[in-house]
Amino acid sequence: MNWMAFLLVFIGGGLGSVSRFSLSKLTSHFYSGKFPLGTLLANILACLIVGITLLLLKDKITTSENLKHLLIIGFCGGFSTFSAFSLETIKLIQTGDFLIAGLNVVLSLGIGFGVIYFLVR
Image (cartoon, rainbow, N blue to C red; front, side, top):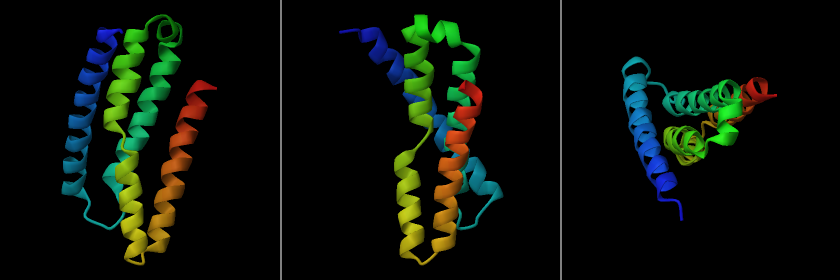
């Protein structure tokens, strides 16, 4: 078992989670609407980080599992949040905000997939 991999995922995940929390708090100072903007921004930024990391470090990512564990699995895994996206979308549906819920799904998935696709194709 590679304990270094666990340590790097742990460190990256902690930094990603704190960054996600900070982004959410920062976003709430500028936006107070129903749309879950903080979660959308975190997920898009995580996709950007994954895409840029894979693009810029293409050769090193395949040879360095440490970079993969720290940046992609750890940081981006802790920074992005599919569970919050899912919960916020369900809450929007439960309150009858179907248009906002649908927009959240379309933007989150469309932009997330699009960012990574265009950066790593």
